[in-house]
Each structure stands twice: as C-alpha cells, then as structure tokens.
Length: 341
Ligand code: TLP
Image (cartoon, rainbow, N blue to C red; front, side, top):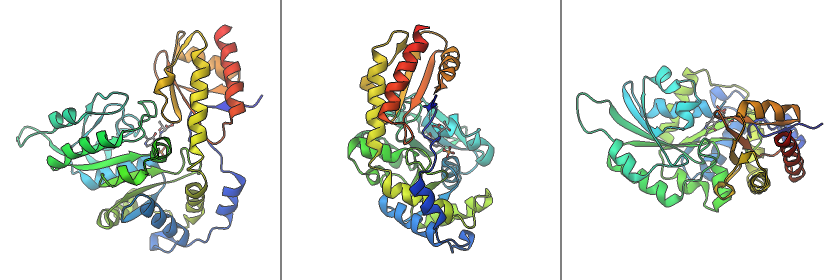
C-alpha cells in the first residue's frame, strides 16, 4: 500500500531531473562568495521578487530569524498574528536569539486589519517596549493557506510605515499566493523590507530558503547568517535544486491547489468530518473530525494516509508535488473507510 503523505509540503523528494541538476552543479566556497550556482540563485530570486539582493539560507526558520535580528534590538517588539510561524514553530527563537518581545494579534484565518495594527503600535512611553517590526505571513499556514489580498496587505503595511516600523514577510509559500491569484510574488515583496521564500515547501527542493531585500540589509544578513552557523561552503549542490524548483515547479502549484479543492469537495460529502471547501485558497486544508484528531490520525496512518493533528479535533492536510489526482481519490476512499469503521 502506497502511503499518501499529507503531513506537509516539506516531505517531497527531489525528482530525477532535480537530482541531475544537483549532480551537475558548478560549486565553490560560498562563504568566500565563490559558489557560482548560489550566486546565480540569489540573483534570480532577487530579480523574481523585484528586490536588490538575496541570501541563500538552510531553512525558512533561519531566514525569518535573520530578519528578526536585522530589524530589532533586544526588548523591541515584533507585531505579528498569533498563529504565525515565527511565534508558533520556531522554538521561541525571537526571544531566545534576539531578546525580542512578540505582540500576538488574533487574526481572521491569519490575516490582520489595519485598525488592529494601528491599535497595537506603542506610543513613546518609558514603560513600554518599542514597536519595531510588523511580521506578516503569506500564504498563512495556520490560517489554512490563506492568501493576503494585495490591497489589504498594502493597507496594513501603510499603518506600520506611518508608525516607523519595518516590515518582514514570511513568504514560505509566497509562490502559492502568486499562482492562486495571478498577482506576482514581487507585488507583496516590494511592500516589505525583507521577504523570506522557501524552496523546500511546495517547490519541492530538498533544502533551502532565501531572504530577500535591499543590498544593505542583505549584506548585514550575511554577517548574521555566519553568526548562526549558516555559511554553507559548496552549497551550489543545494542551490541547484532550488534553481531547478524555481524554474520548473512554480506554475505546477496550480495542480496542488486543484487537488486540495478536490480533496475538500470529497471530504464535504462524508460524515464525521467537517470542511469548508469555499475556504480553500491554496494547498492547505484544515478539517475538523467528530472523533478525537489523535485517534483519526493513527487510524488513518494504519490505512496509509498521513496527516498532522492541529488540535483536539482538528487536523491539517497539505497537497504537494508527490501527491497526484489519483492519490486524492485513493485517499478519499481510505478516509471514508476510516470514518465508517
Ligand atoms: N512550516 C512547517 C512546520 O514548521 C510547521 C510545515 O510543515 O508547514 N514559515 C512558514 C509559514 C512555514 O510554514 C514554515 C515551515 C517555515 C516558515 C519554516 O521553514 P523551515 O521548516 O524550512 O525552517
């Protein structure tokens, strides 16, 4: 029985063509700035996002954390949505690495309003931490793959700008937002000071993310990356996979989105699970089981369907490169079996 793995879009394996690109990559010592493949990737990503410079890093977590360290000093405050990756899934790094205090606002499927941000910004007051950074996520993972409508994003960023805040965008799945809406990823990235994009989510590369921004910010980010042990030497082997992913795996994200809608529509027909097909925007589906999620996760694992519980009755399913339309239909029949047994 072939396992169908919906736990995350991070689980994909490099394709044969991607492995060939890796094997044939020209490499050098990237800490000396001498890896031609890394240099090409950084240039390509910066161009793609309409910004001056980019830095290849091992993970989305490191990319986000470099941005935290670039924009904030100890005791500064980062304003962010309560479910955002930087505060939920990065091991407390904003506090542990940089001494930053997060201010977590409740969002609507991960999205904030301009009024919420305006209210959250601190005035000049010796009692308060300094509001320094607004960090947004597009698509929003915990929100269910939600895309920030560009105008809403612009309005929220404007509030931050007026208050003198820097803006970081966690765009781990920014290309999903691009493909879902037809709005270029650069439209969001240009509004932020720094943007992080990941190659090892929907794009299917084995490793790697990039932090993108002005030449001056990225120069400083390179120093912080070294400090964190992220200088990777002959990293062109990995950058080649990221370049391949950028060139060949962006448009196909539309297939993952279609598969996610197909999965949602199929699940909506079943009893024992609640889904909102109209809320599916990209490749993430949030579901609510009548039975405890932990029980459903292990019952489904025994039938070869893998997913992650997100709460007592809730779970997340993510579609990606290694899941076909036929897999969706097979998964639906296995899930039906699990719900009926
Ligand atoms: N997300 C992972 C888990 O860490 C939750 C997943 O399976 O979705 N930003 C966002 C929005 C992310 O979803 C992730 C990974 C990251 C950053 C971090 O990327 P990595 O795993 O490369 O450090």
